[in-house]
Length: 264
Ligand SMILES: [Zn+2]
Ligand SMILES: [Zn+2]
Image (cartoon, rainbow, N blue to C red; front, top):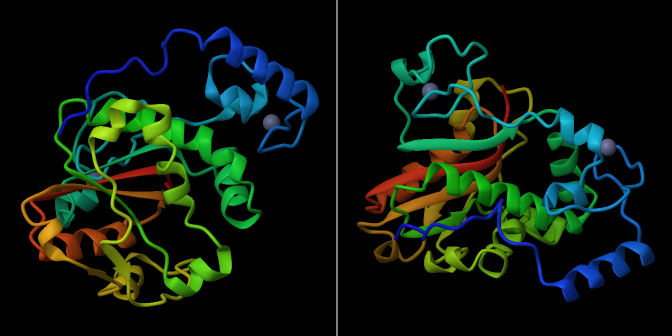
């Protein structure tokens, strides 16, 4: 189902009572910038104003220029517009389309790191909003039947205590009622292999490392469906490609990918 049109960035201001509530909360518990830790002056309607100071917001590198229409890789020059990248020309991905909100560099990298490893869960809401803004922009005219966050291996989930992607997605139905039209399933895709850290591995090694790392429980729930796989960071795309392979192997009609950040 395509999510009904919704003006998320220009929506009318929140009810006055809620504004007062926020102002009171800000006065009692002033916020710090999630990236550089300076005190935040005051929030505006932009959800990122409750997360980043003006300097860090200005350095946020959102992907807005020309990209590869398949894997979403951004190009430095906007001379030609969107075009296939060399990697997709040589090896078309298993997924149909991948898009990311921003480049995996500061301050987005710091925010994701703090959410994951320093358990700063207050970031889940504004980062979830940024993720939704990207979803609205790129899937406006594209069907999605089911949203699936990339699962952690149960051992990692026990260590961390939460799945950061689930945390961001869980905010969607509450913040953006239109998104409730698309069901989310966090128990269908399972990580069956605890993979070593991918850092320092090249593309081929990452693909071998991730091969067979995911399994689909109850394949009938994805058969014939257009699935959106969501992750926090896309590096070479080996993780989301392994998810897409498992899902298409179980009969998914199409797999798209949405991530918050993308490494260059
Ligand atoms: Zn800052
Ligand atoms: Zn590409």
